Image 1 (cartoon, rainbow, N blue to C red):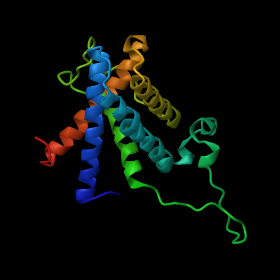
Image 2: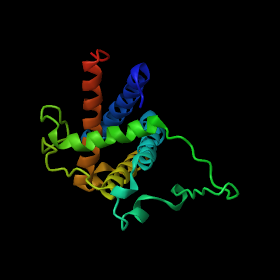
Image 3: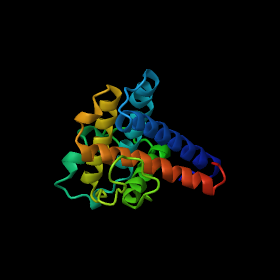
Image 4: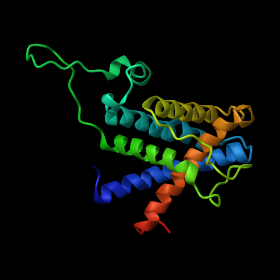
Length: 197
């Protein structure tokens, strides 16, 4: 796993992604503003790239014995499955080592989903209900993938300036809460390590 300065550097990067994305969603969802070109570019490149990292890290870290067989076709794409043979004459794809940065993105997302219902009310800036306690934590691999896909879909909708008023309200709250919670958690950890005021 990542250690020392490299791990701190990754946490700082993740914090920046969550903070900038949260700020864009605040402008877009809460203040009902049209996103500027820089915000659109950030969501469409950096934020979506981070969501891709979560999805890739999820596939790297997933243990198939914990996945119901009925869910596997909805979780893995055919390209994710690699045939391995002990026969040296059988050609097989090269197996690459896991990208620890992507596994870290996945693990951070797991913590964010789990902590979101516990986020202190004083932190929550989403209008209306000042609590995320009713937001369900994804418990199965399929539920996790569905929530990550929801994030990707919402980021793309915001990037093309689909009006936030047309979004399903609970979806908007889940997506906003994810980035708000992730921003708060990374800042809290960095403060504990003396890297954030």
